[in-house]
Amino acid sequence: MSETIEEVRTATRKQPANYDVVVVGGGLGGLYALHRLRALGLSVHVFEAGSGVGGTWFWNRYPGARCDVESMEYSYSFSNDLQQEWVWPERYGTQPEILRYINHVADRFDLRRDIQLNTRVTSALFDPATGRWTLETDKGYVVSAQFCVMASGNLSTPRVPDFAGLENFNGKWYHSGLWPHEGVDFAGQRVAVIGTGSSGVQMIPLIAAQADHLTVFQRTANFSLPARNGPLDAEKERRHKEEYEERRRAALETPFGIAGHPAPTQSALEATEEERRRAYEAKWTEGGSISFLYSYTDLLVNKTSNDTASEFVREKIRSIVRSPAAAEILAPKDHPIGTKRLCLDTNYYETYNRNNVPLVDVKNGPIEEITAPGLRTRSAEYGPFDAIVFATGFDAMTGALREIDIRVEGGDVLVEEWQGGPRTYLGLMMAGFPNMFVITGPGSPSVKTQMILAIEQHTNWIADCLAHLRAHGYTRIEADRPAQDGWVQHVNDVADSTLYPLANSWYLGANIPGKPRVFMPYVGGFAGYKQKCDAVADNGYEGFVLSA
Image 1 (spheres, rainbow, N blue to C red):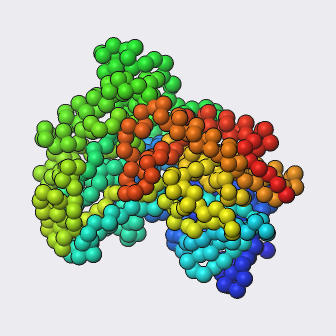
Image 2 (cartoon, one colour):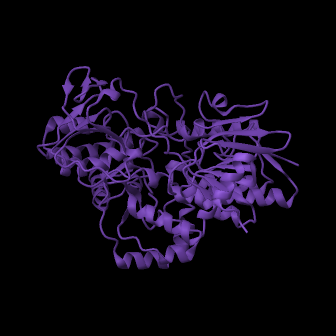
Image 3 (tube, one colour):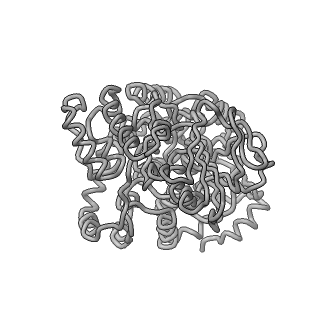
C-alpha cells in the first residue's frame, strides 16, 4: 500500500524517505512524468510549491489569461479516451478551463496521492559515493532518490522589477504570475499596467473595461495578432477528434509541433506585393500566430522578407488606433515580427481608442521610482493610482532551476556552471550532474513549440532511458561534456542563422538585468530535434556516459 502524503511528511522530518525518482514541479510536465514513470513500476514522489497542481495555469490567473495555442492541440495525447471525451468550449482555452482540465487529469489518473503540495524544493545534492540525490525543502522535509526530474517550468519565476519605493505605494500591486486566487475587482479604480507583453496584451482590454481609468506604461512594443477566438465549432471538434491520431502524428513532423497548417512553399520575395497582401490579409482574418508565420518559407530567416510581414501588421495597427501618436508607439520597429513571442489578442489595439486609456512610452524616459500615490518616470509623475499591475514577465527557462541550490558533493554547482548562460545536452541533462533530467530545458525547442507535445516527447524519452538503464544493469547516466559543448554550439549556430537574435527578448534573457545574453531555446524545429533525440537513444545513448 502506498504511503500517504502525511506519512511521508512525518517520516522525512526524521530521516530521508527513499524513492526511485523525485519530480520537482506539479504542472503539466510533472504530472505526466509521474504518470509515465509510475507505469514503469518506479516509486515516484512529486514536490509542488503551489497549493494546487497546474504550474503556469495555477499561478497565472490574471484577467484574460488564455492559451495562444488552440485548445484541440494544447492537450495531452497519451490517452485517447481523455482526448476524445474532454470538451473544450472555445477555440483558445481560458486559464480556468485549462486548470479544470489539469485537475481532471490529476484525478482521472490518481496522481494526487504522490504529490506533496505547498512544498518548495530548496536544494538538491548528489552524492557520488551512493549515486543518489538528496533534496531538501522549505518545510524541512528531506528525501533521497536515485533519479531527479526537474519539471519546474520555463515560465515559473515571476520577475517583479526592483523599482525603488514600491514598499511606499499607498495602493495595492499585483504581478500577472502571482495573481490572487480570489481575483481582483478594479471597478471604480484608477489602475496602472506596466508591460505590454503577452500577459499585458491579454489583460489590458479587460481591465480597461472595468476600471474608471487605466494608464498603460510601455517600454517595448510587441507585435500582436487577432486571436479570432469564439465558441468551438461542433463539427470542427468532431472532425478533429476523428483525426486525432493522424494529427498528433503529423504534429511531430512540424517545426512548431502543431499540425493543420499547410507548410509554405515560397519565399515572400517570390510573391508580388499584391499576392503578399492577399496572403497576409487571409492569415489576419483567420487569426492565430503559427498560421501567420507559415505565410512564407523565410519570414524568420530573411530580414527583407520579414519586413513585408512586419510592415503589414504595423499598417493594421495604424488603421485600428485612431491616435497617430499612440499608433506609432504601439507599432514595433526594433525587432522583426516573430522574433519575440508573438502575442494573440482580442480588441487589444482597439482599447487605446477608449477615452480612459492613455498610453505612456517609457522607452526613453524609464520608470525611476514608485511613489506613494503612483510612479515617477525620468520626465514626469503619474497618479494617483489605486492599483499597479506588473505584467513584466518571468526569469524564463533558467530562473526556476537557478533558484534551487543544485550541486554535486565535491563537484559542480549549477549556478556556477551557468554563469555564462545555460549549458545542457539536448535540454535534457547537464554534464557534471548525474541522474538529473530536465523536462523542456534550455537547449530544447520548449517555448518555441507546442509545450504539451514537447513535455510528452521529453518525458517519454526520459522514461525510455530509465527503462534502458534498468534493463542493462546501469545505475548512472550523465551527459558527456564534449557532447554538451557540441550541442550548445549547435543551438547557438542555428539561432544565429535566423532573425531571432535581432530581438532583445526573454529568449535571450534580455528582460532580466545582469542575465547573460544567450539564446536559450532550440529553434531548429521540433521535427529535427525529435529525430536527433531518437537517434541518440537508438545509438546506445550517444553523448551520454552510462555506468553501474
